[in-house]
Length: 369
Image 1: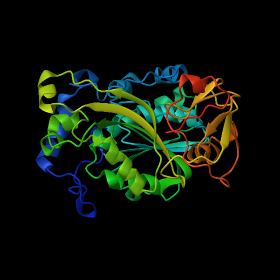
Image 2: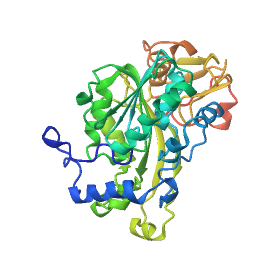
Image 3: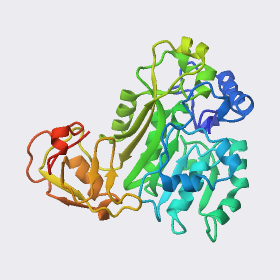
């Protein structure tokens, strides 16, 4: 999973674009770091590729059923598993040994399917080794997972068609790509209208100097390729994705003293975000719309968190901006919400920001990004 999309892809793809300072020697060093230095997550020098998010109880029960070898080689930095997955087509970018794929396999059920993409032979060999094991564990008549060897920058080469995927997930992998703009272009190409990108990755609080971006250990530890979060927002804007929501955020601790000295004042964060393929505005606009959560999402009878500050209580009205209204009524979540109002009358900018205590006590408190 560490090396998804960062090796030479031949004449059809120039991986040097956007990867200033990286050479094949450095890429080989990273591969050695992953294949020879790291036997398991216990060998990591930072907490970057160890999830700081706690799994919901129903997910914990499923993860406990996944084979030990698959879990031991899991290097994710978050929990990119949203709600309402039954029957969906899900694409996992940089699937590695398949932990998240097997988790998703159970959640999408027999009517859904999961496509796992990775470029590393050894990782995919482990994933495929336990395909029948997990099919039996999750009581599926046939496996609903397809593991494909390839590059996250070139999903066309893997026969993943335009507008064919309901959900794209990734866990601490996109930071490793030297051509992140191409990755996101491919993601929004394959997503269906109303589809979702829900992924966890490592971000920096600043643009990193070349000496850090080309450091093989920092790259292997998922820090060297970390995007400055504002640049991530700008890359999405080029794909007409103008409103990405933060779901969770935690700081990454660099536990190795030498690496800490090398990094200096740069700070790193594990952030899970969600973005929809929808025609949204670049600001939160007020059209007087109100949303109610019906309490019908499995495992979420009382509240539903759209992001880190849109927390919907069952039956309680919340005023929302037009972007939030669209995320609720123009996606797979539509059956679980009632949204009143349209965009015929504009009242200016929506009062953005997390709810205050005073707002939260009112019946029509608002919150937006």
